[in-house]
Structure formats: C-alpha cells, structure tokens
Amino acid sequence: MLRLEDICLKLGAFQLRKVSLEVREGEYAVLLGPTGTGKTVLIETIAGIHRPDQGRIFLNDRDATPLPTEARHLGVVYQDYALFPHLTVYGNIAFGLRLNDEVGTGVRHTVEEMAQFLEIAHLLNRRPKHLSGGERQRVALARALVLKPHMLLLDEPLSALDRSTRDRLKRELKRIHEEIGVAILHITHDLSEAFFLADRLLVMKEGSILQEGSPVEVLKRPGNKFVAELLGIENFIPAEIGEGGQVFLEGMGSVDTTLFFPNSGEKFKKIYLTVPGWAIELFPQKGNDVHLWHGTMKIVNLNYSDGFIEVEMEHESKVLLRTTLSRREASKLPVPLEPGTAVETGIIRDGLHWVPGDEVLK
Image (cartoon, rainbow, N blue to C red; front, top):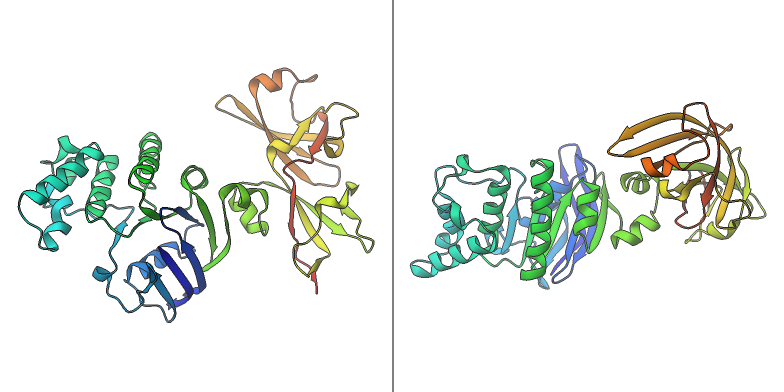
C-alpha cells in the first residue's frame, strides 16, 4: 500500500536520513519515537506537504513522489483535529465530498452512515466548539474515512485526550481497522498505545528508522540500548565478552554465554544485558535452574502506586535493578520490604537479551 525508498529531506537543522519502510494492505503500522525525532515531518512528506530531496514514495505500486497532496488519496488526522470552526459536524464531514463535486442525497447518506458507524450521529448539527476532545477526534476520523482513502495517516491522534477518553478512542481505532480494513500508519510516542494497536512497529530516532518488526519481536530483541529504553526496559547490566567467549557481568561474575551471540559479523567486546522487570525474582527457590544469576542485593528505594510497589535494588558493584510487585506478592515475602534490607535476588533467563555496548571490535 505504501513504500518509501531512501527518503532524505532537510528542513533547517533537521534531516530525514534515508528512511525506507513499507505499510502493507490492511496493516496497522505504528511509528514509535520520542518527541522531535521527525515523525510528523515524515507523515507530512508521505502526504505531499514536503517534497523529499532524495528518494521515492510509492502508493499502490505507483510512484507518488511528484504528485500533489490532493492526488495521493490519503486520509490525514492530526492531533489538533484541524476542524473548521464555522462548519457543523455535518459540514466538516461532508467538506471533502463536496470538494470532489459530490452533491445531493448521496453526500447525506454517506455522511450519516459514517456518523452512525462512529457513534456521532447525534452531533451532526453541533459546531466543534461544543464538542469534547474525543468527539472532535471522531469527527476528524469521519471526515477522513468518508473519502475512502488508500490509507490513513494518524499524527499523534490520542495525545491531546485525557486518559479515559484516550483508552476509549484507542479501542475505537482498533474497531475501525478491523471492520473497515483500511491500512493505517499511526505515529506516537506512547508505548502502551503502540503495543495495543500495532500489527508492526517501527522505531524512529533523529530522522532514521532504527528497527521494525512485530511489537513482541522488537520487545524481545531490541537492536540497541535506545530501542530497549524506549520500549520501557529499565535494567541494563554492563558486561564484557572475554577472549574465550565468556561473559562477565560487571562486578557480578560470569554467566552462561548461550544468550550472547551477535547476529552480525561484528564482535562486541562490551555489551549490556537487558533485564525486564518481571525477570527479577526476590527470594528465588534454591536449586532452581531457571535463573541466569542469583545473589544478594540491597533495597535502596520503594515507590508505591495503584496497588503496586516498585522496588529499586543495588548490587555491591553499584549495578541498579528495578522490579515491580503487587501488594499481595510483597506481603508473602519472608521479610518486609524496607530501604536498607538485603534480599536474595534471581534473574530469570527467559526474556533476557543483550544490546551492543559502546565498544565494537571489527
């Protein structure tokens, strides 16, 4: 449905750097990256607002690079909705149809059918200033969808909404995708949003695509420390690979090396072991071979929220690890959780990965 080949664009001090990606027919692709990384610029380049300095854009296997915005047949929904304040909801949804010279009862039928689908039929006579944020976003979606676009480009569509409205509209986007089947490219910096919606995840930093795959694939095997941190992994243990292939965790001893084989021809001397919080077990059963490492750590901080306790622990080597327990799990531990308490700790093998450190041996 969409294919980008080596898209380069310079806007002031910012650059898109040889961006290549695909969105397949009927796919929900999410572009994840921090604010300022170029996600909106990329969306606007796909839509035709910016002309790339280099590279090509294909829509339905047709080179769309030279085409103006209106000829690309894309639906774009921005985070600020971009509704016309002087028009009613009906007028906003019908605007593109009338621009395409559609008239009469056909327009009304199309608008009312889409309004019914998005559950905003009761709002057709209101103006945008009398709508909630969630209602405005539904109107913006309806205005894009009535034109039956090749695909939808969604620019942080949920970021301006409160939490409960965001959760409802997130489910609505999933329903729209499942029932209409339109291909979607959705950009966001919100991890939970990306994992809830994405068939395929693309991670972006400073104008470049760093990694792509299913959300589970990317989470299990992040390509570098930036991707791992963006995906919410907080625990990184510095490690070094010895000449014989042994792996030494910084100040914590050597471990089984079967996890640590680079996928390329490079040999990484320094790496980070990535440890998801759920892979850290307090007071593990002795003799259990599911652990890569076990030893003693000291609790240095506790954070309480929503029935959970985040436990921050420090090894004598100064390595910090964080994990989260429910209040019920914490109540079953053999000692109360308090700063300064020494706790037996195990790192479970399942879910562990590694990413390159700073030093790479060619």
